Image (cartoon, rainbow, N blue to C red; front, side):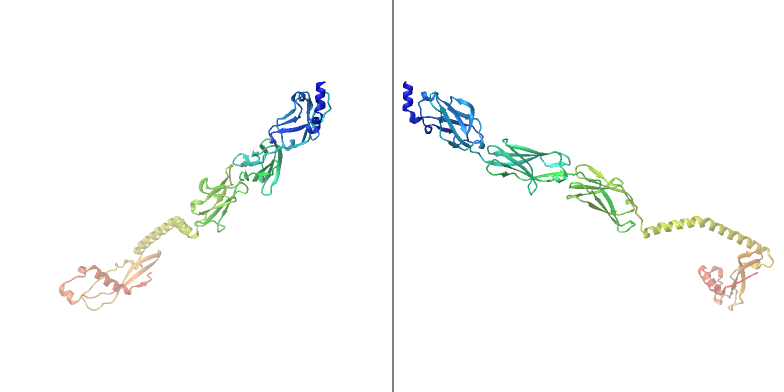
Length: 428
């Protein structure tokens, strides 16, 4: 009877306005817990006899009525924001409902977004896997990650998750995947972007092509020949090596790709096989062999040619000349012998002699014959000398000077003067 009396006295206080919901912490933070409590002004003894139930946006939270006037939610998100109320009932009374309370779960904005790539240096070979890892610091609640490629922001993939790190993968990169990449993250307070990260997809060099460029169609000693080596495909930088008979001539680098040149001043020793090699760190490739033949200029060939012709002529004419000389000597010897034996031959005349007589006047010239050559056994050519004789001067006679005592040069001079009137005749 006493309890019923009390209920009648407290009936005005048991109206719905007398029941209300509280939340702690207030406001609740996204990612943290939240506790709802259903409060009533009834004495504690009477309140313990009631049962409670909580609602959000018209949906009951929990499966049944509970004697506890509180509801604990371990983790709340922004989606947990909404209209909350509670109901209470006693066995002898109708169900009463509290006022509606609007609860907003507050989130923390993202502070920083970063993008990391694997491999870390961002250099991959065609066909390798690229991993793009996007991470956030700060921020609460679910985060939406977006990966973009290039300056135009081509969207690659989108993921939404609670974890602060998300990954996107390209299983097999292609040459066109060489680009700049970035990611964006958003948790309801506006997107934040990461910095740009460069990704380079490297391509092995193709087999280079070696070209020899000479100023004239025929390479000559002294010409400057350009050796041009080019790999049509391959990621730069490319290092080129030039070879002559597998001996290194030099090297050159193409930092932006393409081909390079190497100039060579030709000598006779530069004839032979040439090749080049291209390497960009992904494997070296060697070109096909190019053969170069070098011709000596005409001026350089003159002396060897003359020497060669002279040697050939001497080799051919030497024995012939010796035979001719021997034949002439034999014929001449036989001709002299035949001339001495022949009665008609003038070769029996005494050999030419220079004679001086004691007279101032010049005497008649006396011819002297000498065989020159024998044409046939009965035909001889002879040389006829007409010499003058003179008497020694009185001074020479008085002094008793003889011609034999004179200086040989003086005798030669006089003889030379005497021989100015030499005539040639045909003696038979």
